[in-house]
Image 1 (cartoon, protein in one colour):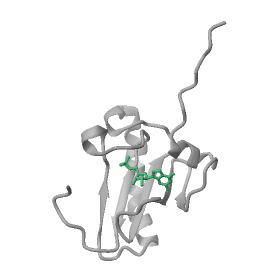
Image 2: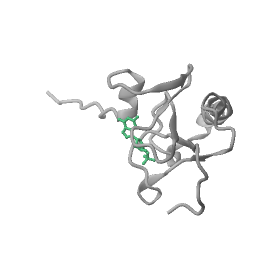
Image 3: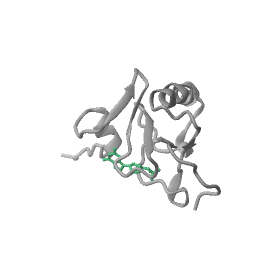
Image 4: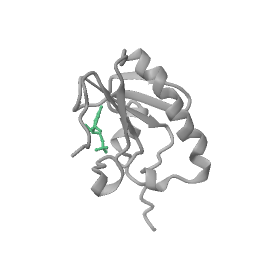
Length: 119
Ligand code: 5GP
């Protein structure tokens, strides 16, 4: 009998399903935000869609609504996090982009001046 293998869940899917813990700061029907385990700034939150889109490269036109929703959540989130002095939103994509988790995510970074360009 053929064995049907289910694709492995990413860490972020396990956070969504509460299989592994995370410091969740916001959630609604379409997305979830939680503190990064290895913060690169005083505030470093990851904002992810519940839909497991692997990367920005995999986005299709049907995803426009959820992507727009993610961006619309950012100002709510940054107010909650008191990022009054500004912040940066980053999406790493693919190997050269430094993506390590194959579930689309926005990094929301702030709490100190951030240099440019990034490394
Ligand atoms: P990427 O490098 O893919 O753009 O970002 C992945 C981010 O996920 C990294 O900043 C990394 O620190 C964070 N991360 C990886 N594993 C976990 C985890 O189990 N919990 C949390 N909260 N963040 C994680």
